[in-house]
Image 1 (cartoon, rainbow, N blue to C red):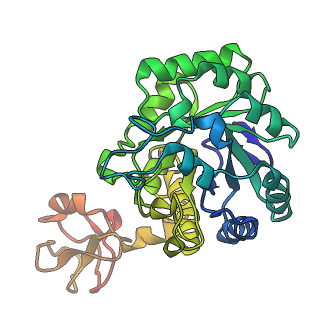
Image 2 (tube, rainbow, N blue to C red):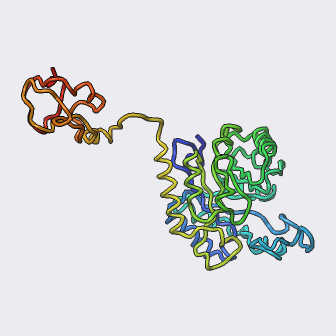
Image 3 (tube, rainbow, N blue to C red):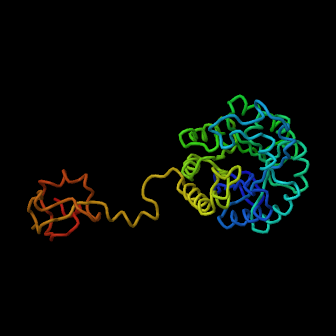
Length: 348
């Protein structure tokens, strides 16, 4: 079990649902605070920010690699520097956003993208740090965050087994005791078909960590499936209205969808239960509706039981159906009226 502020991360607790604000504030602090309120109203456990400056992410140049040239991308033809300038959360906004989250009873965390962001965030006593998939191979950043002693949540999009292992080893060697890996598909949006949430239990067993899901698909089905497979954290991008636009709006949930995510992932977790056979306490009253052997026509003592005077019917107060072949052809030990549950006392 991992302590995440006032919440717990682990199979004994409902999955922690993190609402990722990212750039959906659209450069408005008022909107950012409204997003926090909407996430709290929907029942999310935490709001997540991203902490960087455009100049700490990339260079202010154009050309190959610095301009997105994939026509299928949501950000086709955008310069990376301009994109990060539009999406970043101004550092002076962090304090009011964090205070609003606390006031609403939510936890908060952020993704730092370099050591300066970790140093900045430390003043707010974060309950954890999140490392983004694209920084999974930045071992220096992982070690920097790990040295704080706080829990680390590492997204693993595109990560090979070797790369994930290197990241986990780097975190542990730098002092991280509590690590959560997030299965992630680094396409925006992602499709259910390439989400591969069957990896969740394999990753948990392979690395000995808690495992969750960073989900970029539309809807909530993939997240529910991941929880059914043991995911203990679910992270989804969140906005007020996709129609408002913004860098991440196309693959972000709206408030009612986030509420459904919270409710259905908790139901999935509750449904996991434990390995169990036989009637539970709640099911015991239903045992009477099983089939059993009943007298279906009045019989007198000494009369043989046949298919014309005994039948297998509901309810279940007579002999079990498996005894029918032993009963047929034997004689009645006493008179029995139609509707009498057959017991061995009534069989010679």
